[in-house]
Amino acid sequence: MAYWLMKSEPSVYGIDDLARDRRTTWDGVRNYQVRNMMRDGMQPGDEAFFYHSSCDEPGIVGIMAIVAQALPDATQFDPKSEYYDPKSNRAEPRWLTVEVEFRRRLPRVIGLDELRGVKALAGLPVLRRGNRLSVTPVQPAEWRAILALP
Image (cartoon, rainbow, N blue to C red; front, side, top):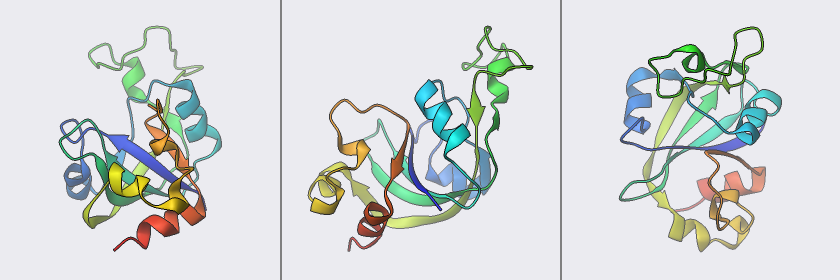
């Protein structure tokens, strides 16, 4: 099992949306490095922190599970979608998505300042200056350290 941190703006799709929907595709990713993580790294059974970004209180707000292998992101083919990519084609899709399922909300937001204060999380990619990736790996020891926070 691998662990991940997946960011979304709550004004676009937040933990409350996932709690309501129970399952969704994590679509709209337009970064090759993240696409490759979805394709090569994510497996059904992996778990991910749901991280609210670009909001008043950014931080980890919940846990979800990866429930399906990467598949073509349908938004790349839809001219009405903001994620439409005219250079992508169905025979060789450029962009992928994974299906995620709600596991639980955390009792509180675990914000960046708190994460930065935990020595065991010094290598967490979301804490690196300039890191803008919407999906990053989380090491098992980091996962446990975050879940152990009071």
